[in-house]
Length: 224
Image (cartoon, rainbow, N blue to C red; front, side, top):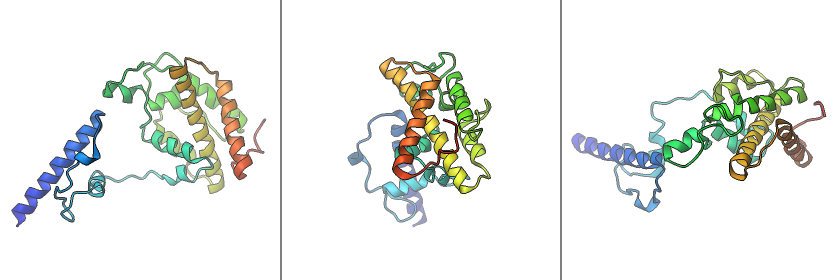
């Protein structure tokens, strides 16, 4: 019996690794082609849930995702932030391994390779956006340090803040990152360039629209 269980576990892991390799290659994976009767280690049935749980075995994260989901921003912005902190947005460093045609150099500065951390935090264009946000928010938003990765930046900026301030600051960080991403996409897909001042204007407009609709984020303390 033990030998049979071990054999079935090997079959399950082999099937799981096979589909992970397909997913990582960027190839289309037809859900109807998934093996529905492979044997999983827990209940004996291969399922999407068992495959999902398997990838987290032996892992542990201290990241506080509630700092994203409780931010005073719209759902689409928070979902973008969730992808951003995992460096899952489709910057050039993610597109190239999939053999998708793209320019590997950041389209906003035309200097360094495009990664999530570079584009949103370290690019000279992004730094000017954050500098303007710092001035507008009376230093609540800070210019990202060059050595920080995205997760470190997010956690450092939001650590040990009262809940109300944390939710406000997280929202402004999300709006900042989102609009830098939009400026990049406008440049890549529409061949239209933006200035840091225009991006900050768009950030203020989006934040103000949500304030008018929901009463938050509270922007009255900031400079015009």
